[in-house]
Length: 298
Image (cartoon, rainbow, N blue to C red):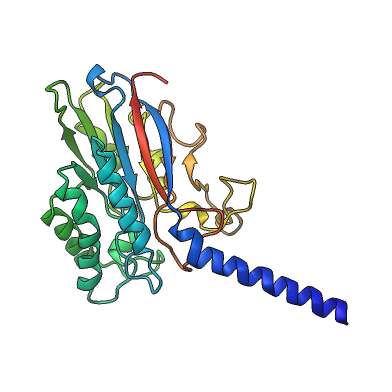
């Protein structure tokens, strides 16, 4: 009996340590992932320039991770990348009035726009009030989020293309944003349709499940968020997610995704995000800022 009691006490202690670590410590440890990204036909002037990626704030959750969000934006300002991509889920689920949460998002992101860095965004499912697919779709809230972002100089791309000018006067880089999958707005073909044939481009979206619908060769560099990397992962299994145990769909947890996913000539990277979903915990899955260094060849 004493042995069993001792084991239970030890297990309880381990569980308590994991909870403290996962809720109070690891979410504050920002991981900066440096990735080389080869883009066909990349102009010489773009070689070596950097693109920063942030995703999944979920502002409005009962235990938000705003300290790490501010640290991430401050780090991006110091890096001075050529552009910043924001891959959606700015708010969590704020109820009928999201004004306070949206204002907090604006305050967190304002240093980026104040620094004069070109910034592009797409919306995620939470920005439409969709914590679950069965939740009521709130397009009014999504419009409020988009309007607030546009109001501070962030371009929101819903199946549209933006031209990122070369400061040196050379050929541009094209940025295509795909709409929200859960909201029924994702149209990957339309998103890249206006990119000139053979032109260098980056395609980004919130939900990686829009990626397979991109035409072959249309997205040599595609970027997404949404998964949070699963938030809880086993040691030694950096890209395994518990989601694969409960969902009957292809799971793309984080990092560079297998070339077997999607059409030939396309490549996808999934960011782990900054905030939380469902439970405010991260174990072996630190919040992420991704910095892509552009290369003319792999």
